[in-house]
Length: 226
Image 1 (tube, rainbow, N blue to C red):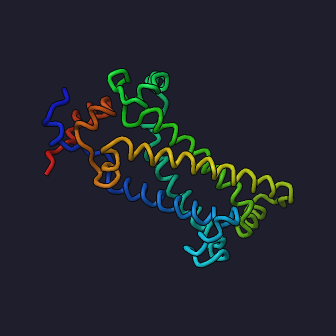
Image 2: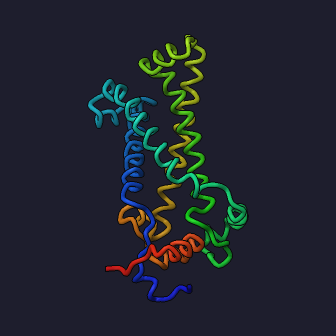
Image 3: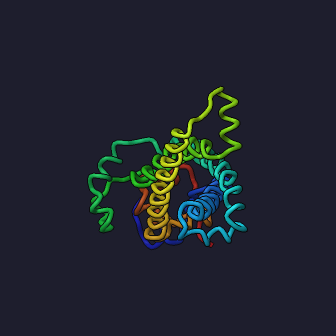
């Protein structure tokens, strides 16, 4: 299969409807968490709490939105885990990162559904969401009471201080990774179509995820663009 003009008229299924809904639930809840969390984090960001009806309401909604994020992310994790396992080509891709940044695709190895950069986002967010969940429960009165009753211990002030530090640190890192994720999706033209329409062009697949495209062609997951 070679890339030609006809590839622009072929669309390949990238994500199912349920996968896209799952993704946008996580994306929206993450943005809401970021805005509400920042409003509680530093006085400069207090005005953001207006979006939630004030600081008190932002404080009450923040942990519940966090639970939505955790459940949604768990769904994504289970769904996309097989495609995000490390492969030998990931290390080759990373070693040639300068060619990624300069769009010299001819020097890059063929990759599956996700490249090493996308896998980094997947695994780093998995770790960071887990840290924010555990530490967030320690900062949430209702959540802490439940955990203390479940495991039969009482958290000390020192432990809660560490929870606050780790929670805020993980949140800052998660926001940084999210910015990279969004920037890459915009920078690589045609990527957003996968999460909006559910399909990408054959040319996009051939250029960025050739190994994945070959498998989709074998399965017949292609159609002519309308």
